[in-house]
Length: 261
Length: 281
Image (tube, rainbow over all chains, first blue to last red; front, side):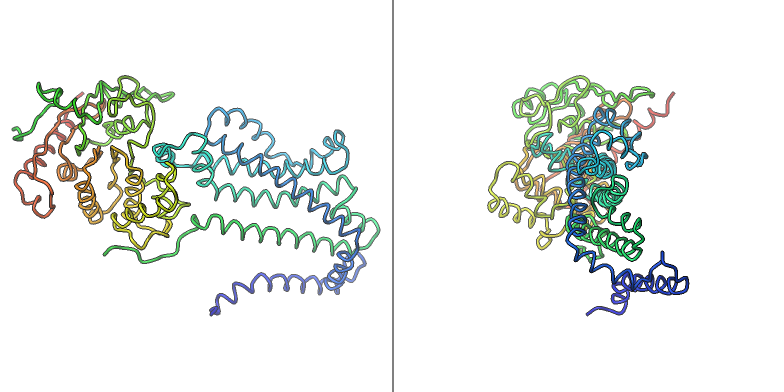
C-alpha cells in the first residue's frame, strides 16, 4: 500500500512537467507569435518527426555517437583515474594536464578537431569522448584516493597482489564515486553530442533542430527540444536505476534495531 | 616494588635460548623513522627486540604515539622498518602474508560484500571451493555470534558486530598469528567487555599466537600472558611483565583477584613513569 506521501512524491515530477507545459501553452496563446508555438502544437509535431525515416536515422546516429563516446570515455577514464588515485607518480604526470583541460569547454575544441578530422562521426565522437572523460577521471581519482589503507592491507594479508587489490578492492570501494562521475559524464555526453552537431552540421538531432530553425519550422524546433530533453531524462533515470542497484551497499542505511541486548 | 613472579626483562639469561626454539615472531633490533617533508624526522621505534613464542598472547601497551601500532605493522609486513629485521617462523618478513592476519580498530571491512562475502573472501582467495568455503564461513560466523546476519552489509551493523565480522574474516584464512591493532578501541565499554570475553573464549580453543596492541591496562592484563610496556618518542620497550594468572579467565573472578589488581597498579605506575620522563626537558 502506498501512503499518501508516497503518491505525492511519485506524482510530483509528472505534475511539474504538466505545470510547465500549461504555463507554456498559456504564454504561447497570449503572445501568439509564429516563432513561439503552443505546447500542444510542439507535442503534435513529435510523432511526425519520429515517424520520419530520415529524422529517425539522424537521431539514432546521434545516440550511436553518444554511446560510443561515452563507452570509450568511461573505459579509458576509470583505469586512469584509479591509477592516479593510488600512484603519486601517475597523479603527478596527469594532474597538470587535467587541471588545464578540465575547465575548457570541449565544444570550443570542435573547430580544430574539424580541421583535422573533418565533420564526420569521428570528430563528433571525439568531442563527446572528451566531454565524458574529465568528470569520470576526476571522480575515479577522488574515489581511489579515499580508499582506506587498512582495507588494502587486509587484502594484502589475504594474499591479493597489487593488481588484484586494484581490481578487487580499489575498484569496488571507489565505485560509488566513479558512478557519480559517470552520471555527470552521461549528461555531458548528451550536451556535447548536441553541441557538436550544431557546429558540424551534417547529421544528428542537433542538425534537425537547426535545420528546422533555418526553415522556420518552429513546431519542429520545439518538438526536437522536447525529444532531446526526454532522451536526457530517460538516460539519466536508467543510469540512476543501474547505479542504485550496483551500489546499494553504500546508500545511507535505514535503521534496523540491531543489538545483542 | 616488583610484581612477583614477573620476568621484568626478556633479556634475562635463560629465557632467550628457551624461547628461540619455538619462537613464532622474532623482532631483532628494529628501528623505524618516519620521514615527513618539511618536518623533523620522527623516530617511532628505537632498537626494539622481542621474541614471541608460538601460542602466546602478548599485549603491547603504551601511550598513544609510542609506536606500538607501527611495531604491529612491521610484523604484519605493512611497514618496512628503517633498521633491523622481524621474522615469522624464522623467515624474514618482507611483506604481508596470510600467516599473519590483521584486525584493525577501523574494522576495514569490504562494504560491498555481505558478512558472508567478507568472511569468505580469504578462503576463496586461497582457492577453497565456494561450497566448502561457505560451510566453514557459516560456522565461523556462528562462532563470533553473528548467526542470522550472514546477508547483512557492513553498513547495517553496529561497531561491535563489525569487529566480530573482521575477526571472523581474519580467522577464516587460518593465520598463525593474529595481529590486533587496538581492535576494541572504537567500541563502548559494554561492547568492549563482551568482545574481550568472546575473544578469550575463541582463543582458548586453538591458542593462536596473538599480538594485541592496546592503551588499556585492564584489557592488556585481562587478556594476555605477557604485557610489553612501551615508552614514547622514541618508542622503546620499557619493561615486559609476565601475567601469571590462571586460565580460563573470567572477568568477574579476575576483577576481585588481588594478583590482577596488583598487575594493573604496577603497570599503570610504569606508564606514569614514562609520562614523567616526557615532561623533563
